Image (tube, rainbow, N blue to C red; front, top):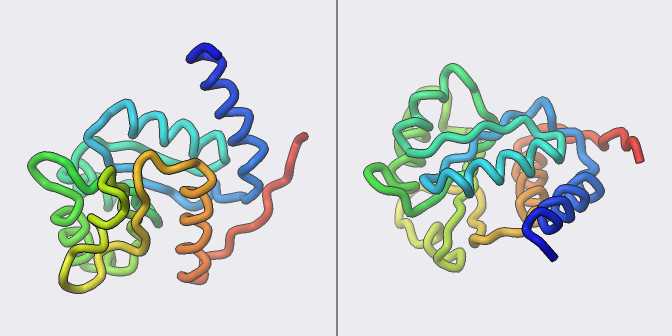
Length: 156
């Protein structure tokens, strides 16, 4: 299967799998790998999720007040301001201590749990995470926060 066919297969799968309406729940994707961040945003948008990508911890801090995400998907290993420092900075900002932050790590999921201190992450996902794993984690943390996620109206 060609790369284009693989992409079309993933998009078709995303449209079928994502049966929840989360368009009103903005998700900020923070990853220093531009391709990974942009592809994740594209897949989330196919699922009907409003998503935006930034490529550093500093950029994430810069867009919080203008974009107001309810969920942040945060890469752990980034240069300059890593995922721990970024999450700690976000949690310390007035009004941002309750935002859902999901860690994304290529280090088999344990890296996000290794931090000693107040909880920084609501969930730790291992890269590469399957789309259904990400969507299920989003639904779970939103449900824990009492944010209603309604069934999508399917056009299929």
